[in-house]
Amino acid sequence: MGQRQLCSSRPISLPKIAAKSRLAGCHVTTIGCIALGCAATRAGPTQHFQHNIDMIKPQTKVPELSVQTIGGEEWKLGDQSPEHFTFVFFYRGYHCPICKSYLRSIDRKFDELSSMGINAIAISSDSEDRAKKSKDEWKIENLPIGYELPIDKARQWGLYVSKAIKSEEPEVFSEPGLFIVRPDGELYASSIQTMPFTRPGIDELISGFQFIIEKGYPGRGEA
Image (tube, rainbow, N blue to C red):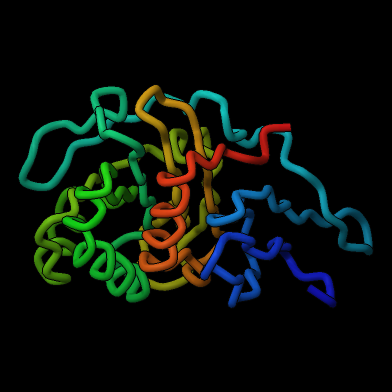
């Protein structure tokens, strides 16, 4: 990548999925090549890279996860039985305009994901009222919206947590993350951000997972 940044991303090697972005402020297992990135830490006066030993590695079981959904029943990851994967999109909350456009893009592709054998849900630490505003005002019609993710659970999944810097933000909330989980609860890939930017685009995800499903490409980054 040339200069060191807060996060490094290895080039995506699958056909038609060249890495077009430079991910900053994130810890990512790259979607596409599924190669582990790194977490940045600061020690003394110099900045260096350090792997997070507490991260959930591909090919290992993810923590249990259950949330209430707007207009629906309790959603449990352990109850999901897609043909191939479950996409768990953690988003920041109602206060985040980038989350609005991101969730709307996923919602438009929800049927296509389903046809590929992929379930999807969006989850935040928002209250039920804020999550309902997100669903209604953002016109999310298909994508299930889970709410009241406990901050301790967010940390267990490896998500970053922020404190409010604006009046419209919750006192604390989890930052974005995408976890791609096999039907048996094993992590296939993940992408974790410290801020609202540089999330994997839904078209890139669909293109990548068409290849992954067709070729039986394994999860990487387990070592």
